[in-house]
Each structure stands twice: as C-alpha cells, then as structure tokens.
Image (cartoon, rainbow, N blue to C red; front, top):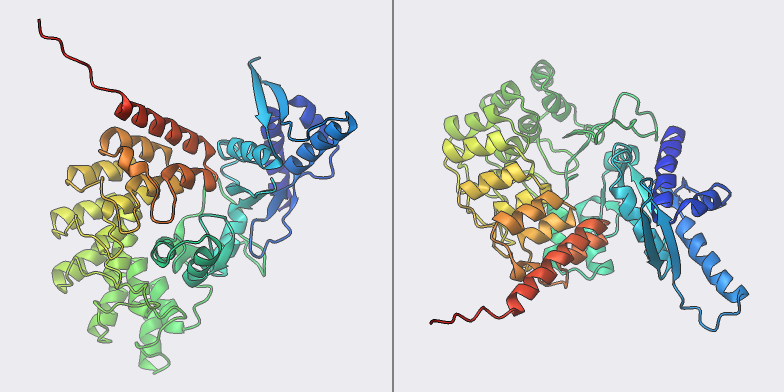
Length: 463
C-alpha cells in the first residue's frame, strides 16, 4: 500500500502542476492535506485528497484579509505548461478545483495501472480506488455504484442505494444491478492475498475470473476448478449431491460451464442428470450454463450445449437477456460470430428493459464489436424503456471512442442526447461519473447538433 501511495502521490503532484500551477505544488509539499489513506475504506476508496478544499479555503481567507466586499469572487490563476503555454483558469469553488484535478488524473496514462477510479464529492474531496482495493471489495462481494463510486453488498444493495440516494426508478436501478461487472464473477485473489490484504496491482486491471472465496461446497469448488476426479470421488462416496447450490443459488454445472470445463459439464449432465437448461442464481438474475459459457467465451461448451444437447440458442433469462447479449457485453467477438453464423441466434432480440445488443456493447465500449453488430443490421438508434440510448450507455462508462463512433457511424443524433426517464443525459452521465473531458466533448457535439437544426436551409434561386 505504501508503494501505491507514493506512486499515486507523484501523479497527484503532476495534476496539481497542470491544474493550479507550480506555486501550488510548493504549497502542497508543505500541506497537511496531502494524499492520505481513506477514512471509509470499507465502503469507499482507499485514498483521499482534501487539497482542493484547502486551496479554496485559503482563497476565501485571503479575500477576508483584503477586506473584500464580496466573497463570491472566484479563484483566478495562470498556469504555464511544460511547453511554455499559458492558460487562464477560473475556479468558483473547491468542487470546481476537485473536478479539474479528477479530470486530469483520469486522463493520466501513468496513473491508470494503479487506480481504477477517481471521484470528487461536492466538497471537493477526491477519493481514489486502486485496483488493489477494488479487488478487495470484489472478493467480499461488494459492488460499486456507477453514479457515486460507493460500494454496497451485491446487486440488491446497489439497487436500493440508487433508488434511495439517486432517485432512480426501479427499472434503472435494477438494470444497473444486473449489468454490474462483478455479478457472481469477480476478481480472483492473487497468491499474495492474505487475511485482509488485497492483491498486488498489475500493469492493467486484473482479469475477470470466478472467485471461489465464498464457495463452501466441495463439489461446486471441484467443478469450478475443472477437477473431474475430485468430483467423481465426492459423488461416489455420497459426500456431495448434484442439487447443492452456492450462496447465490448456482449449481456445479453453471460453474463448470462458466469455467470452460467440458469434461465436467458432460459428467454432470450425463452421469448426474443435471438439467443444462435450468436457470440458476438469485431471483431476477438467473442464468443457465449457456449464458455463462457464452459470456466467458467458451466456444466448445456452447457447441456442445446447442448442437448436441439442443439447448435453444435464444433461451432468455428471467429478464429476457440471451447468450448473445452476454457475449456482446463481455466483448467475446469470436463467440458472437459463431452464435450468429452457426447457431443462428436472433441478433435483434430485446430484453425486458427494451435493450438490444448495441446497448450491451456500448457498456463495454468495444468499437470492433459495435462494427460487427452494425454489419448484422442491429439498430443502434433504439431507445430502451427508460429512455436510454446507446450513447447513454457509452457515456456512463466513459467510452470516448464508442461515443465518437455512435455519432459518426451509428445514426445517433439530437434525440439520443436527451434526458432519460430519470433526467440523465449522456453529458450528465459522463460528468457525474468522473469523465469530464468526455462530458465536455458530448456537450460540444450536442450544441453543434442544435445549431444545425436551428439553421434554416439555404434558399435556392432559379434563374
């Protein structure tokens, strides 16, 4: 953690230099409000930075000292870049300073391998969540709210939090819970994990793999690990029953399918009489073996399930989501190509929230997947039941390239940048999720679209 702190602080100093100038770098070095361990690590990030609050408080104090008649005067600064370029900056609050610092930090390529998220609260306090800390939360079953960055216990916790704290309607909150990237599949702890210590960060976020941290059932653990021999021994000695489920209501078959263990899947279906089509998991989130295999890109498992066992390729979950949707969302392009060309899935299928595959792809932001869907004729201009466009989905996750593609090639325009049923526009989604640069770009595109609509067509004069 100490190494993380020192490296993150180095990038903080760089951001301060860019946003506030060299004078404030010197002030930071003597400040008592430098980067420090977070005070609410159990529900939030692992580091926090209150320096923006100190800077603006000092500005207000200076106005008092000078006998100013108004204390609404903003902080005005001139910064000089490493190339000698001068820039005038105006900050009206500690929040404005914090937002500027957060935007700079989120654009820092040297910080990205260490930090998964940077948030600025209304006071101007910056909260950092390192990849190390994100893994620790995931190991304990806690999921992050995309709107504020706080962590809650499971999809239900996310749903209730968004309804109460962010005034989201049930549909929007439930959709967020269902689409969270840590739903059953979370980060695998590294070998360095001990007691409450989190895994060491790598040069990129850890791969998404099944965690066995909460699985107590020996048979399910063996299935998830692909250990057929251990599973057979448990079954032979009656130490395990195929009907057993984990804490989420999932059986051994979906774990084996999600892990890509065909020999284990074959044994569980043929020898243990497990139903490969049965939906497993918590109410409202149940999936079967095909959904998990497609999601994780296990082609051999999907071929066996669809072509040999006859599982309908478009068999939906309780909320209408199909294997194709999950494969699209997890950017499994080869899997998607097989589902379309061989399994003949319905690429236009809508789930119960009115989302098609394009909206799932924009949550991931893969332009190559979006181009594939476009080639299949899938409608990118669709608005779901909450008024979300694909642009809303891409903006909430900060996918700049996806947003650019949607406006240039996806057929999206003015109507797709409007408020959804909860009052969120793509611009607001981007800004409130810490993607200030994307929010600014989207606002510029929206303004340009409005101006083009208001501009009268040219008058043709026939001579």
